[in-house]
Image 1 (cartoon, rainbow, N blue to C red):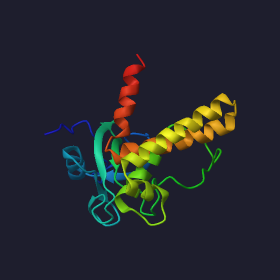
Image 2: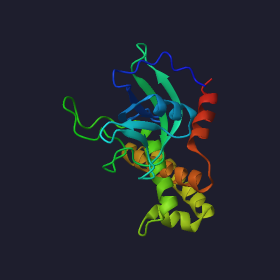
Image 3: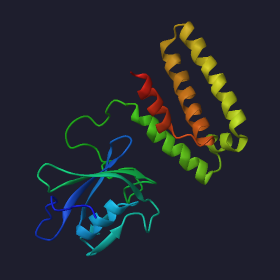
Length: 207
């Protein structure tokens, strides 16, 4: 059994837990755990909490189907806060938003510059389209046509990127590159290749 002696529960037997997406490191939510919830979380595969409002254990996702799959659990230097890295299977917030921290910031700019984490977010949407196949969705149409057609689109978009680049149209190059990345992610999803494997290969080549 995991040693929890360095975890400092408060007078109510609870400890706050910060939940981060294991891939993007985006903060998804903050909740509380008691000893039993922490033990269940450490045992995996899902994150458990203690609901203060209901005064009972809370298996995150049991009702909504939006589970948090445990990747790692860490304790801070004082032992009074947990950091849980998890893989969400759906929106973490009960409002349907991906994160509970979706409101406008109290201080600072609302529109932070986009980063590469948008690729992970996009892939999650693509995976959702693959599961649910909503009507009218271009992504759904691609999945229905299958990997050969998706692969053809990747080739076509790669050509468009090259044409834009050699014509020195920077804006169009960025737009075409976005199309290429999107279709590449759809192809990865269609062939059951997790982008994390691609990131690992890139990390190897960084050396």
